[in-house]
Length: 214
Image (cartoon, rainbow, N blue to C red; front, side, top):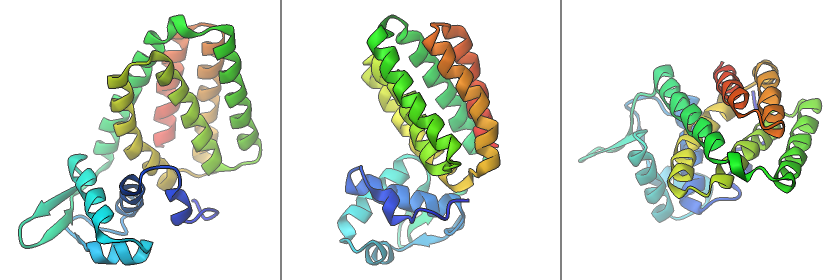
């Protein structure tokens, strides 16, 4: 599992409520918070050395995503989250990226392919280093690159919502064996994009993401 990067280090790069929601989500997915357990805003604020206001907003974001419930007189309660829930998010994510591949087909100029290839080389280097966390991060950048080429705000929004759950799930669950299973299909996906074989890219990305779930 992931012992080479702390939770607080993983909070870099997003708005404070988003960072905190990822922090709490990770605790839910690795069952530090059990289903039915109350999340105390003051405890989270103290742990992260912040005020309660962004914690409250982070919990609202998780409520919108169906991860927690606000219960009168009880506070914020963790909802059950099962493997079936992860599978549902995975199906949505596969559909979003497949749609992104379709919508981006006319945008793959030589320049964009070179940028994509450069990102891929960085990803391969993280694979050679057996750095699971950085490999995940770089692989996600390649998926996001495809979505950004579509310039479709709605699709990108749906991607970001599904990706938060799956990305944190991967941070909790992935190990070297998971990366080994994911990488071959991911390589096929990238090379298919570079060869403009978009049908093959769709097939490969579905297989890669399913391997990543474990």
